[in-house]
Image (cartoon, rainbow, N blue to C red):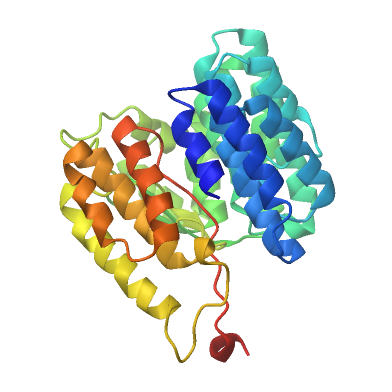
Amino acid sequence: MALLSGARALASLDNPAARQAFAEGVQLVEHLPLRTHSLGHVLNDAVRYGALVDPVAAIALFRRLQSDYPRHPGHIAGTMLVQSLAQGGEINAALELLEDPACDTRGAGIILHLTPDPALQRRAMVAARDRWRRLRQDPESVGGFQRHEFPQLFSQHRQVLDAKEQAAWLDELLQAIEYDPDQETNSGFGENVRFHSTRDTHLFQILGVLRALKPPEEVDAILRRYPEVAAAAQIYPLGLESLMSLRPPAGTAGGGRIGSGSGSGFGSRDRRLPGPSTVPELLEEARRLHREDIDPGDPNLAPHVFWPSCHAYKLALYWAGRHSGMDAEPLLDQVPDIDFAILAAIEFAAGVLGLPEPFGVRMEHHPKRHG
């Protein structure tokens, strides 16, 4: 894992060295004595590192994992790949991943944002719509956050479609809202609107399109069936479109809400970006987790580099480097484990360089807890 983490930091300085470190890291990971499910988690994490280091190799690994671990959730790694490819100008390669039904990924939105080409934008929208259709037909996808990308994309980017397509796609979305199984969610919009139903959430997301394409009496009839959305429409008449037209309050760029989530647990609580003052709290949380991991009465028997405390130290040192630069280097002395210290030092460097926040697999195996 140190090789994979190091490859991420090296990517901004020396691409050949980063690619070599990534290749060696993947080779080592594949020989770890882990159960199949755990190995799938770790290799998907490797794809996420590779998205930043060597997208071509990461694509090959990701496609292989989709075949070898067909029921292993890989959409986060796949989405990072799509984003990395699109940001690197490889729009067609990103679209090919999105269009491949065998690949578990999202990311149409980043393509729509980055390319000015109407034909490529339409391909991204069609790929998102087709993936949404497949997920609607897959009973095992119910509750998955992934299936809920499409309504928001349609609301924001319907202009890439012609008028007939817009009308047809809206009708299909309305039918899905009406007849697909509802799911519990916890979705927040603005300061005063919160929904606990995916039907309400999706209707609010497309409310602006609904008002643009349907006669007022039909819109009113629909809103009468969804009183929570009707109440929200008193604040935001065009739903998500009204929110998108508002400027964010001054001073919130560094600490706004990152997301809200569905019943799957993804982002189920509002999350704030750590500021400089939170680094001591992150370190204290890492120390607490480490005490649990080394508890002599019930130790964590998972490999050390996957301990929750290891990830917590990596995260704390990343944000220390991000906010304070090299002035925070003495904090590395607070990391109690030499393996952790190596990984934390890499993430500290990544923070100093301004690379994205670290991610990683966390594993726990406490015999007394799990039997």
